[in-house]
Length: 164
View 1 (cartoon, rainbow, N blue to C red):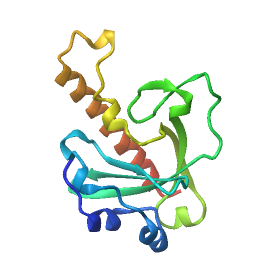
View 2: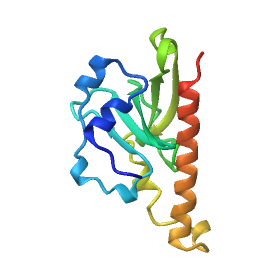
View 3: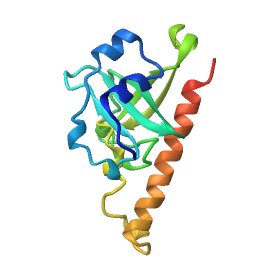
View 4: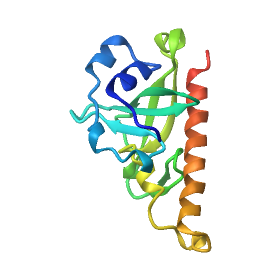
C-alpha cells in the first residue's frame, strides 16, 4: 500500500459527514509499515463502535466509515472475515455496516459485512500458511492472499458507492 497523510485520509472519506470526519481519530501514521498493508484499518480508540478503512482505488485513496454491530456472534462457533477469508473464533469477527455514499446514505441505506473486529486483515494474511498451502513459497501465499483481500475490498467499496 502507498503511504497516506492525515489530510489524504480525511479528504478520502466517501460516506462520513463533515462532523464525523472532524471527530475521526487517526492512527499513528509514523508507526505504520505501509509495505505490509493492503489497506489502513483502525478502530476508534475511545471504544465507540466506529471503525475506518482507507485503501487506494486506482490513484486515489477511498476512505470508509464503518460501524460495528452491538451484538456479537454466538461464542464457541467459527466465523470467517469476508475480506481476508480467514476462519477464526466468532469473537474475532464482527458485523460492520457502512452507510452508502451520497444521498442514499443520508436516506439510511447501508451495506454490511463480517470483518475482523480489529480490522487487521493485512497482519492475518501474513501469518504462517496452513498445511494445505505449504507447497507454495511464503511470498507466493502472501501474494495470493493479498490479491484476494484487495479484490474483495474493491468489490465491497464498489457496492458501497452504488446508488440505491
